[in-house]
Image (cartoon, rainbow, N blue to C red; front, side, top):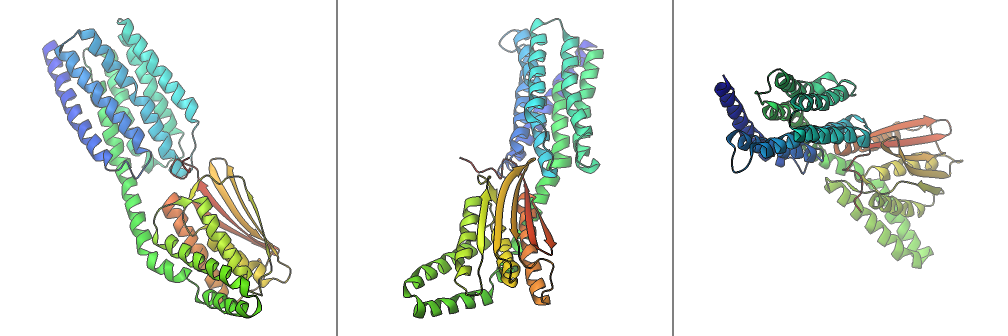
Length: 407
């Protein structure tokens, strides 16, 4: 019987090495797309090392049996902490922010206990129970996650493998299935969750590319270009010294516009602010525009999709204060708030009062473009609140590693 169990152990261990190496190779292809993949790959790496040590443990290769056994337990105990980090990172996509320090501290401290019990040598039951505790913690997090059942099904199915293997190990310590069970956990999550996520990212990128031409035509406003050039011509007669700065500003505005429309990646918030400032300076040379812009920016070190803030400021100028005899102020703010970057553009202009249908259509085109870019590039949201006394546009972007600007 012991010989049969030995064959089972070595067979499933070698199979686990093969599957985990394939997972590592495939997962590396997606590492650049999603920051969460790093934690997934760390889990795969420690699993591969643990499986290799388990093979050495079963064949007594080169050194004592006890050293390989202890090392394999230590490696396996690190899978749960890295996997917990991976799971918490996937929760950011649904706007969920876990207490990272708390949960990872629990998992890493438990991993230390597993290693300590293994070193003592006579505590197989405690090793199995502590390992079981690690994965029950992950299961607990899944059950209380904001993810839907469909999004969590891969995680739940996968976590049952190590839970079952530790229970089997408690009943019969000769069966060493923890390594292969962790491989099955990672395989289940990768095939039932991560691949779907990657397909959504690819589909979003394709959709964004398809909309570029339409977005380009919608964002280049012929009437604004015409009015700007006409006013620059008037400046040449009234204030010759102001012509050169006006032309430079107009050129810079167009350059930024085209760069933003042809780029697919996020840009620093300061770059978008520069584009906003160019537009504001350009708008102020038109005689019908009399307004002030106030900024209160407590958060600036983050990335944002291009052409998200500028169109909202443009709407506030064109259809807010520009259409109101009383409206004269625009306020731009940015703050960190409960795991989100929140940016607002507020004017005290036209608000809900009547406007032409063509103007309504023009504004809706601009805001829908902003909403599309936010959704596709950073899972952000745009809301518009109109009152009799003005309009407030609010951008909410989930704060994550991929939007935080690197120092």
